[in-house]
Length: 234
Ligand SMILES: [Fe+2]
Image 1 (cartoon, rainbow, N blue to C red):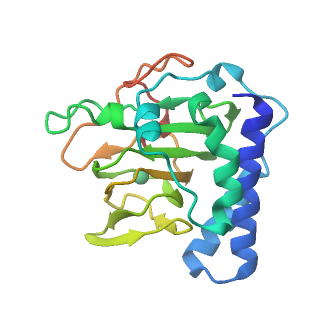
Image 2 (cartoon, rainbow, N blue to C red):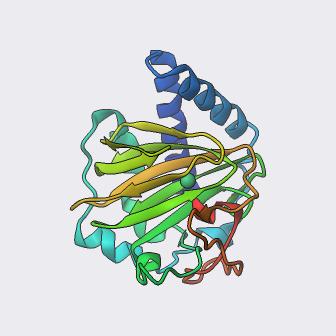
């Protein structure tokens, strides 16, 4: 993935977040976090990219996305969809929880591609920004982390659970996970493609509620399903 393509995709997200703020229809908590995200992104140096983090990963989640391609279903997120979709192969996908006996192939069916963060093409210790992909008919089990997390659904309507309440969120939905809230996602027949942002403590890894957390051996540019930055676990 070229640095310019990565910047275009990040810019599409920034424009969308700014438009959502300007429209004034979000909850006060989401509006405050969107403001926080934009303020932190304003301090990221986009003039220099660490290109070792822009090499295609070869992660098997790409096969999942090719088998059931994500669909653009929401006009407001169309520019983001257009910016990311041609780059899916080229994004630095990874997955880094320790293996789960009850979901032995989960690491091949979901992954994250981080563009801004402590270990990412554009460096920051204040914010992480990237894409999450979850293949069809998969449960991303209950997990938590101290970072405040915002998701923007780009494609796919999945069941989202937080604080024991479950809702189906369509493309265009913004979902806010406060620090350490336990949350989960479950897809149906279509894959989920969502942008995420982490703020606050972006260094502490996520953990499954029932045990199991990040392993730590990240080799950028190589297929990686056991590696780790703070953000491996959006
Ligand atoms: Fe999360």
